[in-house]
Image (tube, chains in turn green, brown):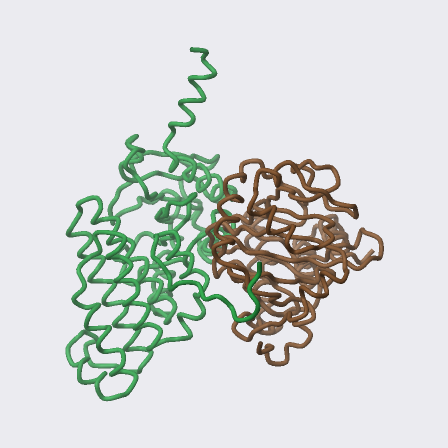
Length: 305
Length: 278
């Protein structure tokens, strides 16, 4: 067999997620302030067959990190395309890194791209997965930080927590976590799927609570039945929210569809502007994940041919 | 048909012509998707790379010949392999100048522009038949966003500034027909209209908002993300109702802030080309 034919076969057999890795690393490292990119998880160990998400630790010159963090969502959306707006986990425990997650379409597949930014010369720290392979090293990689006292991460994390989550943020959070629950469940990581589902429920609960001003001391579930029953809109949301609260992590596209429909029905009642503002992305999310929409309506008027 | 409120100007630019049989549309979509491999990228400076077409009617009969011009169009060999599509296009009785399958990939944009400017004065019209689409795929004209929904045929006057995007995907696939004005066309579009649900009037941008976007783009460019900086500003056309050409002025402003007079000049020239202002 001619070598070129084998090369073509090897190329065709290359896990497609490596193309996303190429694109992601190529897009981010256009900026000279990015000194190093490390790959986390099984893909970094050479297991591209089973990986369908990417976690990258991006080391950035500390003096440029604030600027880069302020524009990274736009850069990723423009260079890679995203299905939903960026999701920054408001409960992220890391104090040493800035983390953001994007749902990215690759052909018909939905990939989870997680970027973790750290000042150059500092370790990525928790959470898992940990970096296992360097996939990019810039000219400044390995040099000591110009000013080791400069670390904007704490201030940026504090600002993020201070800002809190808007209605659209919470809706995006719920949808990202539902997808995460499906992905974890399909890999038999059932406890991780359960964790995602718990947090998706909490995101929807917080959306209802903040939209309907049903604020309660403690911020949990207790007292919410009574608070929602007290108003017409709250009462309308209650059935759906209760259903969602006992929904198991989706194990199939059908179960995901049911969970997403319930979530969106409640969100539409509680925060219609949040849903309307995300009409396009939500439609894309549904299509990529094979969630059927209501049958397309045929517009009124003469039908041709 | 309920016209959009205050949308008489918009209704002069775009509207729904008629409904089409959904089974017919489904068969046409099947044919269009099966021939998609031969699509060609044309009009590169008008887009960010995700717009591809395959000609169904032109004067050469070559489907890869995709730069439209005035002509007496005939069917290309691809259309001869698409019996449902051929039948649909013939049944409309139009005098075609060009007809194309057009695919707009996810995260793809046709930037604000005018069409037909390079052609001689003549009555021409553009019709769209959406075959695959999603709610993030929209046309913008006159400060409003219109989703050309599946199930119908749409008319557009492309001599007004307009742009199209498929923001979050999946692929948008349309048949686009450019045709000459005649009795058949007039009969076809006799009931063209725009329902309120089809259009979303974009908000005006305040000076503060535009300044913030400009600052963000300059930050991107300073970090090294020059292409993203340009595209971030060009995308504002889909977010706000802006005076004609504002997005090109903003890109030029960004390069002015960066002290790059050659790029300022290049974007001023590009604005003229895109909007036919020469």
